[in-house]
Image (cartoon, rainbow, N blue to C red):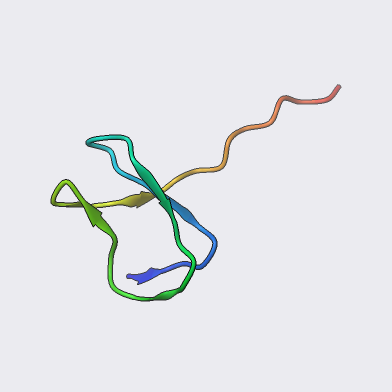
Length: 47
């Protein structure tokens, strides 16, 4: 899987996060596991 430019990746194990500044092939690893793309935070609804 290719790294996606502008996406933030987080480590499930230690909680560290990185921001991808250059896309390309490969994976970002931390604590000997592949980091997952961080989901965007949900915004409160404005009723």
